[in-house]
Image (cartoon, rainbow, N blue to C red; front, top):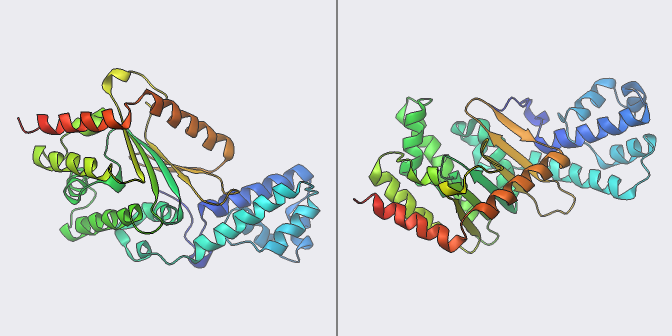
Length: 294
């Protein structure tokens, strides 16, 4: 599960942690102490700690003063930090529907970012991506996981996933690029009837101009993403870095630095190149769906 601190309006966010980490790196590189940094902006040591750990939003004047104190001469670097701070403040102020959905759980932070993202690239080895699932498929997954026993809780989880799918439509729809392993299409989650309906829904969703679906066939063999699934979340602002979300059975990992994000982008692109072209991918999905009728 995501272990990020939840401190009311001081909630640590992915972007906040990224910004705080950048300021910490600059302070260390300059040889300055937390006490010296605190004095520079007329703050307490504890405030510098909270800023560097991403617990509080950071004001533009404090960033400018600290950058000058840390002898950051590159104006582009300062501008990038200011943009990151602005994005972080906007995320913290957002009052999305997911904040009132307890079933969102550890996914709440991801949903908040997905809500303001412009593009998501996802590699899913064993499951149909959440944004493309049917209610019946999601319900079958929830039942099989065994984490939810109350039917109302399961329906709440299904409702959360269906509400997320609103990002695929509207005036500014999310650009969604999914590469899906063939095993995810053949695993009969919920049985053949549920899976046939899921595959047909996948075919329908792939007709949307903002949805791009490719299938990595079994015959592709080993590939760069064979170790696990992940999603790369991108934003409109040129200074905003991509954030990578890696979700395993027992933990959620956020990749929050440029070098590692670039590595995941490379892995995704390599796997996409090994995958079937969109038209051939849809043909394979149709064939698998037809086979389930037999």
